[in-house]
Amino acid sequence: MIAGNVVILGGRRAVATLAVGAAVVALAACGSGKASDPSRGTTQPTGQASTSASPTTTLSVVDRAKQDALAAYRGMWQDFVAAGTTSDWQSPKLGQYATGIALTNMSRSLYADHYNGLVTKGEPTYEPAVTSADPPDNPSKIVITDCSDDSHWLKYKADTGQLANDTPGGRHLINAIVQKQPDGSWKVSEYGVHEVGTC
Image (cartoon, rainbow, N blue to C red; front, side):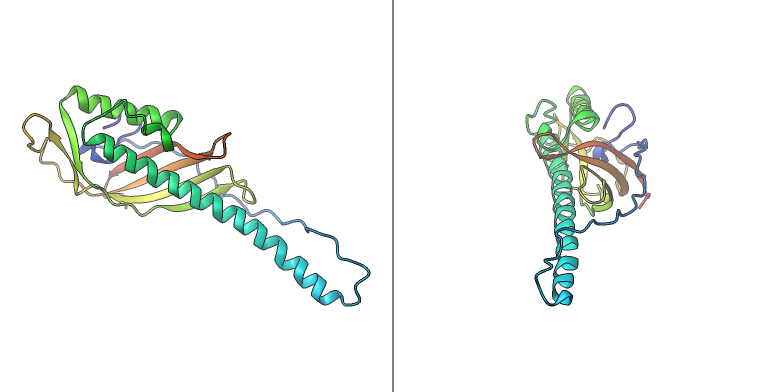
């Protein structure tokens, strides 16, 4: 469905691949939080508290970023699926979880369907997982890998309700970059959908 380098799952045609740079990120060493209180007589409990506090804080920040990125990824597809039922390429919801290249490509895809008299019905499935976070201790960029099935998300002719073609759907590998925005929200900035059978 998408013009250029990215094709959406419901496109039901050969899918081009968007190369998403997903460098493997090494975990950075955590610095110590608070200095121990020298007035305390026992150093063991103080050391244990200091050791457990820093990783817990770091993990909660990272886990929250991952959850927010995954929610944005799912939200982007939900909004795209909803817009596809009428090929509403101007839907204001498209920008809620997508920006940049991702938003442009979704709008172009929906416009192409609108121009060609097509709508998309049904629902794809998703299995997204975070594959990297950068920087590792306080992420502002999350890379997601997904295996999505569009077998039950098909294109139809808007005027007749008939299937647009007889090409079967299937499982597609998807790579996506989700970035933290200046206002603190997370949005998908790029994604690439690979051809059927890639996952």
